Length: 144
Image 1 (cartoon, rainbow, N blue to C red):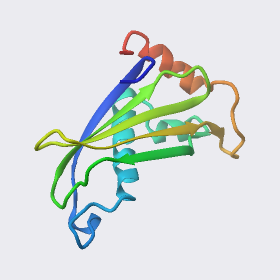
Image 2: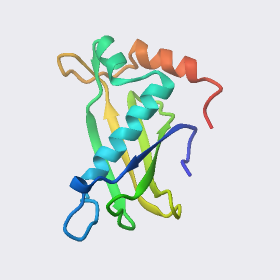
Image 3: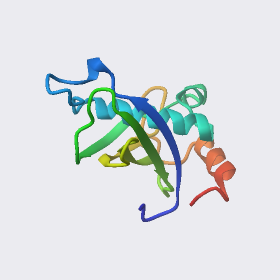
């Protein structure tokens, strides 16, 4: 469990044939896409989609991402991917992820990412932009 307040969103997906190797195991690099799917679900649920970020004249590039692989996902497995946004004092989106196989609820992978905020020219923001401040106001009372 996270060590600070968080919001979470979940999405489900199926491991596709083109995502597996000759052993029918999902290639490790696809987990980053699974995390991205969960971030997109988070953005849709909580109103901070990439389109909202761009419209505000901002960018949110990945600054760091980690993955711990615990068990393999196989061809045609149904997965549930959870993204948890941790409440942060600094100007960043701090996510944690979990990937479970739906059939047996086994935890297959976990990870984390940090996204910084920049302006459209790529300059790092050191103060929270109005978009982030607005989101935190809207999310007040929703943090777990």
